[in-house]
Image (cartoon, rainbow over all chains, first blue to last red):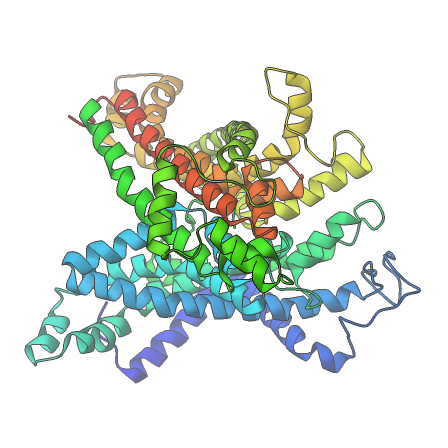
Length: 296
Length: 315
């Protein structure tokens, strides 16, 4: 990896996008995510209402009026799935940004200074990794209470260790490189070296992790909602829909299917793009995810 | 060897200390503190004062923590606020259910994952290899709770073959009922974990296939089956054991969602119920026990290593 100039960075970013899109599975995934994002944020314009109740049509199967049926309050399942995408995507995006905002500086400091800072910070990371992500998130929600911001923070904090490790590994591999030594020889401060010299050259593994963690964040948010401790109703959320749908498996077997399909396709899309990105950026298939008990 | 185990056990102490302190202070940070959870929202000033006095909550947090810790060391994790029963007893009741589920799930994962990895690695690059890779990507990507719901829809709602809610039946009591009850939740977790097993084992098998000693074995004229079974598989199994251990350990606390799907009475559901009823001593106790078991299983894996790999010597 060499230091990058702004124009060169743009050109290489365009090249990365082209090479990712050249992989058919990744192209399909990007198209799907774009479609679902556009749909989620323009659904109001299409006349879809996730909260409108039709008391005469509760728990109905698919029909012309409701292509995916209605829920126990007579609400349109299709509308709720589309609006659920908004909840899911915004929470995941916020969580990943939060995780990176905490984890990356942690890893940079640990790797850059070494010594006691490294030991202390990495022990915190180890401790966070020792608990299954879902347990950590549950403990946080027990403290923070149940709200969208609590879900975001809980999901975000579980991602901190990953970013800390990636950033630390980057520092360790770049620290002794000539361009860093040169900047330091010119009298750069530690924070200049870390944030203006090393960080700009570490974007590829961090970006890959952001995409991979998006899929984990979406899953974790849905899992929390499924357990009844996520974003509170009536805000539509895929996990919450699966939770309620499960209660009506005998009355409305199709209820739980569509939210699950949307959730699964979104997760698989992020996974696929993450794999494509890592093969393009790092020339290897880092598809093997962090082994965690459940993907949650 | 004994030295190594003692050293690793000693390392457990600071981790659990820090973890327990973190958990304790986190619970203390709850809006309104533990008192609010104890007396409810509509309590009078007198009730609040009485409860604060009764549980010694007016003492400094650090004193309360040390007090809790000293009692935890004697095996007393406090009392559930909800059921008034000892926390350790409640955990003890759920633990066997979770351990059994974790064991069956890991077994299913191995039964599916190991043959997949072998078939994949032996036909590297072929359509079969690609199909199997696709399968493990799918097994990894699909949320376990949705797989669980689909399995319930198929086997309980449509075919009416298996119960939709899984009870805990100890295997020694009634093996057949155990299988009927555990197959759906364990299968859900097992399918997921088979994806991980297959991917890791395929990777390490391929590395071994390219090693020099395999070429030597083949050039000696050994049959391919012998090469695979005697040489490749044995070496490839080494890093794989760690993954199996991590997954098994993770299931102890991490199977919360699957336990919820199948209303299985395990440790994970106990935590959820405890959080739901703001039963902080119970939440604290559960998380501490889960963490301790997780670390112990990982230690066990490290010890196991010495037996599988004679090259490793912990001194």
